Amino acid sequence: MTERLVELGDAMRTIRMTLEYDGSGYRGWQRQKNGLSIQEVLEERIAIIAGERVKVIGSGRTDAGVHALGQVAHFQTACGIPPGSLLKGINSLLPDDIVVKALADAPPGFHARKDARRKTYLYRIYNGATPTALFRHWAWQIFVPLDATTMRAAATHLLGRHDFTSFCTVHTDATSFTREIYRLDIATIAGDPGPFLEIEMEADGFLRYMARTIVGTLAEIGRGKRKAAEMEDILRGRDRARAGATAPPQGLFLKEVRY
Image (tube, rainbow, N blue to C red; front, top):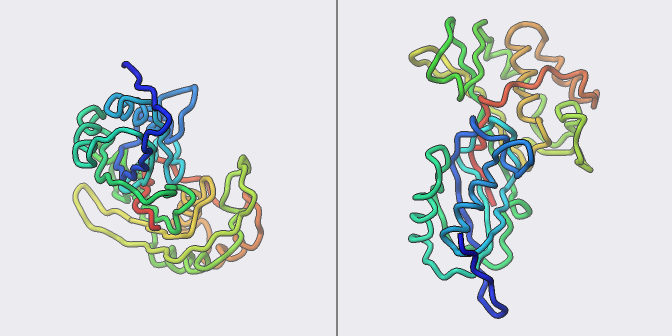
């Protein structure tokens, strides 16, 4: 690729994108040395269209194997390509497992991460009696029947503003563990090859592994390994060792980011 040098005086634009991707083949959102990332693929393909190097900043870092239905990201560029043409051009170069769903010029100063006010994550559990081949990369397979009613009772303890230290990895650079969960819904969906549980949670932000640890703890309650009332004690304990195992990444989707 022949890189275009951005000259002094070029008008810089901020481009906002909404992305959908299957994270199965990636080491997560952020560039890293030990494998391919979503950010790396986007930056390389956008650079070809824009004729200059760009840095793509996402609303948050999805982990390896985690998917997105509505990730929001932005980048700055001096290229004058109209949004519609830019959208088509980028998508024409992206692999099939990454798609730009929407693209537009953003107001000056827009920042995909800093301006985000709420995020919604969806976690899908396949709860059939036999394995599924089609959904193995997009759901956690649990073959023991889960008690959704008990899980819903446990989830009510997490609503509101709390310290979520118990649901965060100990390997984190977070300076505050306080977050507010506005909504935590658990729906049972019948289907073929089998039933699914969909856990949807909306919050002002999520700590690393927070969504997956909440799901892992709810699953233990749904299996009868814990009681619903224990969720309150886990939350108040502020100790990662009190919560359940971290649910696997393939069932998690970043569904929506609100500004």
